[in-house]
Image (cartoon, rainbow, N blue to C red; front, side, top):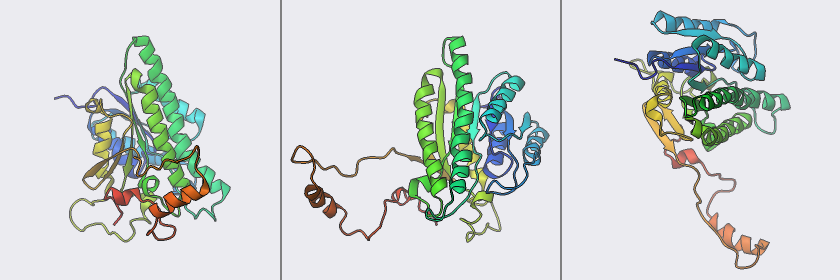
Length: 312
């Protein structure tokens, strides 16, 4: 019996720990040859010396289970190192079929306290890192499609966050990066569809090194699988990377603990038309102020609550 990803080559970034590790193991279990990328810095804020150990350990796990894997320890936020990651995959396996972007760091602070470096560092790793690998993967698929004079196989799974959906007061850099990743995903999905490529994004909720503070009050159960285990997220990544997801493109899915929610694109909640050539201040005051009446001062729209996905 063939496996759904048999014969396919995949890259998973940030795969040395947490979600990326679970995703790399799942893709390998489904038959893919996996390039395990991780820069290997020990601090979740991107601090500390880079190390090959995390990526190599996961690659060893895959090989020990009978799969095919190799480690790559480059920084995907660096344009040229991202290029070499894609080049390595193609040189080793003859092609690239699946790209899972997961690498990220945190530098949390309120917007009025955040430094320029804290902003730039998070945008660089999350948003630019996603762009860098996507750019080189897309160029590869476009060239293959032109050579074949038809569509080829390509899958991108990007990692966004509920911090983008519902806001996160102490993470303006992270929330902005994750929102940007959704925009990158939908643009990529449109641009590459004709070449056979599908691009989607997930908002995972899982207990990892990056979320240890968020879920500090929610202890792991004594028995059974932790509802916040990364292993709950990995199967969706495997599905989106598979031929079965050929009709899934430009989508955003929230996933955690045995639950997957497909998120709709924003819809208009109310519409007002001016009775004149253009709005005046007084007319807008008469229309919009009553619309928002009754809400506490400063209340914002929380998409996660509307979706029934409010954090416990």
